[in-house]
Image (tube, rainbow over all chains, first blue to last red; front, side, top):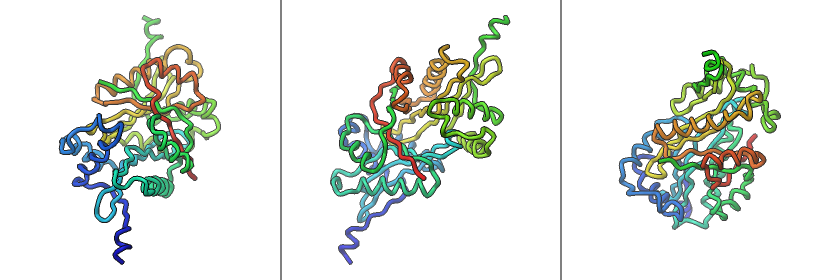
Length: 156
Length: 156
């Protein structure tokens, strides 16, 4: 039984007290390191409150043995296109360094796809930095099509 | 004065009665034609109501001489990344066929950028189908970087 417990993995909405662990995962990344700050910065908490209060936003954590080991944000986008179809946008996907290479990312994205489908979304969409070649093979293998150019314009 | 009036261009939030004109623009497009339906379909109106009620969503129309000649949707995305920065997502950009080649698209996107900046967004982002080469030159010229792969997974 203990080994079964050791393998326990749950996905749930993030709580306020998960914010530092999530920020640590965002920062523990080649691209993320330079753009994140102190996990205790109150701006992270303000952003969490905004996400948590929005019925179309879900900040998700993967928890294994009581420890947060992954995160992603799902946003359900309304639009007139495709007969008013809702789409699911996935952002800020991260797996804790200690847990990489164990298939957690795949379980997370598959869970998000299933959730979007159950909700009636017509599409799941995401963008991935062009330098993240491993991520691209990963999304290709999950059936995603790299059909679009992802444009960003930094302000300020 | 009349010529000035003839050049009047305003950007405003879409109203319920604009929905058929917006859907017509979405459909009047190489890629859009096959995925849209009757502008009177009640699913379009339901999607409009959902967008209109969401404080983080703005369905915008460009109006010239009282006629809707362009549309785009702005969504203000919350996230923990980048110190909890808000980002502006642009989707469903269309210019009426009768008005193409007159610089309206540029005015629309510049307006969206200014609006996102005034709001304090750290970034404007969008995806564009890889077949839309003219659109890519257009976004490049506006300072956007095609830094990401845009992945889509159709459900259903």
